[in-house]
Every structure is written in C-alpha cells, then in structure tokens.
Length: 144
Image (cartoon, rainbow, N blue to C red; front, side, top):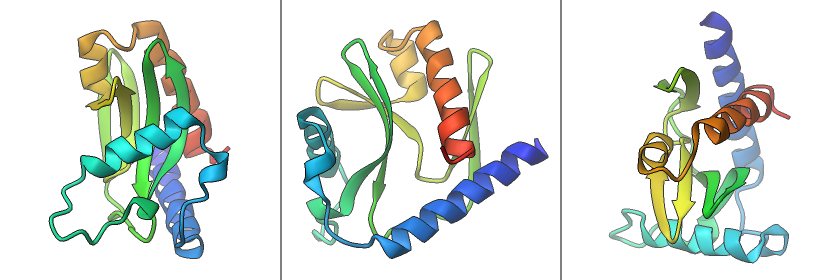
C-alpha cells in the first residue's frame, strides 16, 4: 500500500511538472479524429458557466486504447493542478489508484462513463478491465 501511494504521489509530481511547463495551446496534429472528438465532447460537458476554460485547455493525458466502441482515456486541463489526494477504486478485484480529478474515463458514442460505470454497462469486459489495469499500472505509476 505504501508503494502504491508513493508511485501515485510521484506520478502527481510528474503531471504537475509537465503541466507547469506545457501550459499552452493544444497541438492538434498528434491527435486522431476520434481523439479530437473526445476532447470536444469532454469540453462541452464541463461545468464552465463563466467560460474560463477554453477548448485549448483540454487534453488527453493518457489513452489506454479502444475496446469495442469505447475509448479509455484520462482527461486533463492545461494549467490545472489537481490536489495531491489519492483515490482508489476496486473493480472485480483490480485496484486502480488516481490523483483527484485524473480518473480513467470511458468514452462511448459521445458519452463519458466512469470505469466502473462502463464495466457495469457492459462496454468493458473483465478481460479488457485486466488489460486496462496492466496498462494503468505500467504507464501511470511507472511513468512509461
């Protein structure tokens, strides 16, 4: 458990460092058409009553891949540093740890679901959940 918290804390520090350095406009050239649509859908779903958050502030921090019609991603905002609070969820025996605000989201037909919600809806199978967990552990905690 200490190792999990330490790795999440280290990943938070890396995200904050990258965010501070890259506080700028989105480079759309490296995104696929689907990823651009995901960013736009996420932006339009934000609680943004005063328009302070601009489309250029939204980006995909991690893309865990496409599973059927669902894309599994972590969304973030440039120049936004989430508090260093660690949250954990367990789904079918797989433990996922996150920094507050940097949860895995599942995009399916223009809608976003939590990882648990996508699993409950049948968008993600148990096997795919295991694959996502492996990627999350390797790429998120270890910074690969």
